[in-house]
Picture 1 (tube, helix red, strand yellow):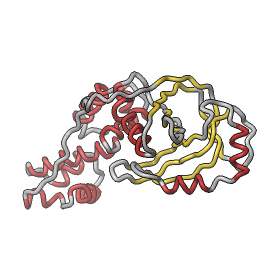
Picture 2 (cartoon, rainbow, N blue to C red):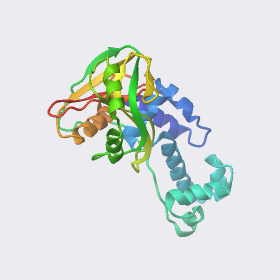
Picture 3 (cartoon, rainbow, N blue to C red):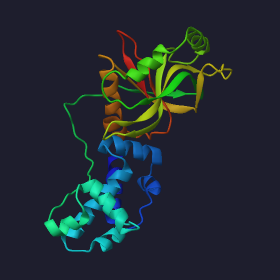
Picture 4 (cartoon, one colour):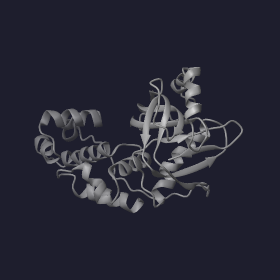
Length: 276
C-alpha cells in the first residue's frame, strides 16, 4: 500500500496544473476510494482534497515569486477567477498573492512521501475472522470526534439506555462476540483539527430482523474482519490500538478497508478487542 500511495503522490505532482479527478485517483492506486482516502487521511493527517489544494497553492507561491502575474497563476492552478484564488491563497498563507512579489514573502507546503518507520519493534497481535451478514442493533447518536480521553457524549449515550432497551438487546444477541459492543461509522471528520462527527452505536450483533422501534438497526454485509486483542487502561489503550491499526498495520497488510462499522467490546480486567 505504501508503494501505491507514493505512486499517487507522484501522479498528483505531475498533474498539479491539470484537471485532477480525485474520485478516480484511488483506481490509479488499485484500491477502493474509501480505503485509499481513509489510509491517506490517517497517515498524512489531512484529506486528499486538502493535500492537493495545499500543493497547488505552494507551487503557485513559487510562480508568484518568479514574477508570474496573479491572474495567470490563478488560472494555471484551476481557479475560475482571480478573486477565488486570492481568497483561497490568503486563507492558506495568511497574506495576499500580491504581497509575494511585492514583499518577497512566501509559504511552502512540500510534497509528501510515505515511508515505513520502525518504532521499538512493537508487534500487533491480530486474527482474521469471517462473519455472515448481521445487524448491529442498539441505541445511537452523532458524537464529536475525540482522539484522547473519555468522550462525554458517548457516556451520555450509554446512560440514556433504558431497561426495556437493554432487555431487548440481550434477547436479540445471538452472534459473537456475545458482548455489548461500541460501534462507530459514518464519520465526517477533519483529523488535523480533531473536528467533525461520527455515528456511535452501543448495542449487540444479531442475525434477527424483527426489531422494535425502540432500537436502531445498522445492517452489515458478510465480510472478513481483523480482530486486535489488547490489554491496558481504558480508553487510551483502545484509542492507541485504533491509531496504530490505521497508520501501521493496514498500510503494510494485504487487506483493503471497506466502508463498514468498526466496533470494540471492552471488558474490565480483560482484553479490549477492536474489530475492523
